Image 1 (spheres, protein in one colour):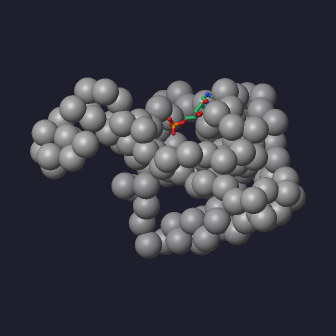
Image 2 (cartoon, rainbow, N blue to C red):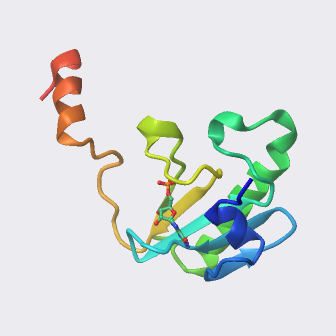
Image 3 (cartoon, rainbow, N blue to C red):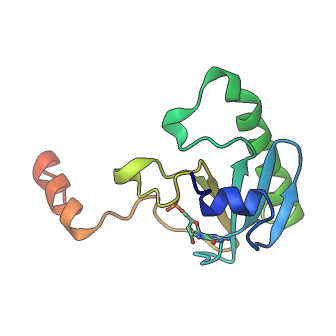
Length: 130
Ligand code: 5GP
């Protein structure tokens, strides 16, 4: 089966601006950043999404969060703060089927979730909120 883009980046077969690479994780700049800092962190083991994580993967997950903490310090956004996002599946808006965590920051990021109009309408109807 053909490798997806993150597998190719992990294996050095597609170019990316690598920030950190170690035995467990690879971190690289997002090609289309949504904030001044926008880094993607992936486990070196191919896991399609958060829904696929198994008990034996916990070392990868802890190494990802340690790397995120270190990158935030390295890029000096640890004091101002930042956000970590993982999109999972269709409703989560996941485009690349390889577990990844977005580290975003460098400016105030605003509200956590911005629903599209179509979802806002359904949500308001269901919950009778403004
Ligand atoms: P998702 O929607 O799956 O959570 O996010 C995928 C992210 O991967 C997007 O933010 C997108 O900009 C980024 N991306 C897609 N293709 C490439 C690529 O070839 N290189 C890099 N560095 N980032 C990519």
